[in-house]
Amino acid sequence: MPRQDRQRTSSGTRAAIAAAAARLMAEDGITDFHHAKRKAARQLGLPEHTAFPDNAEVEAELRAYRSLYQAEDHEAVLHALRQSALDLLDLLAAFNPYLTGSVLDGTAGEHSTIDILLFADSAKEVEIFLLNRGVDVAHATPRNDKVEAVLRIETDTVDAELIVLSPAMERVVMKHRDGRPRERVKTPELRLLLKE
Image 1 (tube, rainbow, N blue to C red):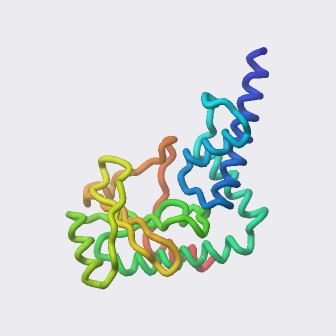
Image 2: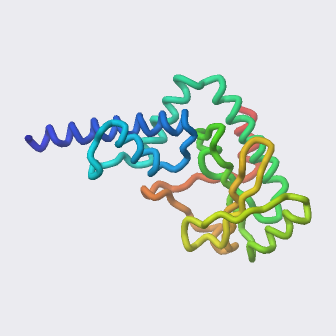
Image 3: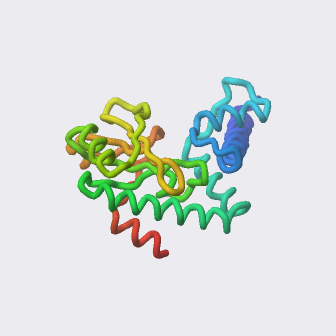
């Protein structure tokens, strides 16, 4: 097969996996990109060594899917999630909170989690703060060694993951696995987003 045809086939396969993964994320509530891509490839009958699309490609397909098939419902769900996130940012103001992840970028659905970055001297400090306010806290596994702890709490909409980092990390630009900068906003920007 000529090289040009292989590249065309490869990009077509990547697009098919991205579209199928986005559908799985939107309909089945899968939140892990890699898991969605693997399951999509299996459903499409592709071999295990198939090149997967990156997360940005799946996010683009997820946005397109939600706007096409879930527009009205998704808007209401996203607004409720962002309102819950704002309440958490207000509650956790002492820890310089930022909203990040799918609730911010607009790809979140009813099965998503609210991801909030906190900057504190210790995770114990955050945990005690929450327990003193009657908020039950569970621990989740941190995704990398820069994260001190991930605290999982319930909100009125979905669970939230509070990602606790040292104060020195607040100035560091965090990136997605594919190298794109990870967006994050503080309370004033989220308030403006909710008014749109």
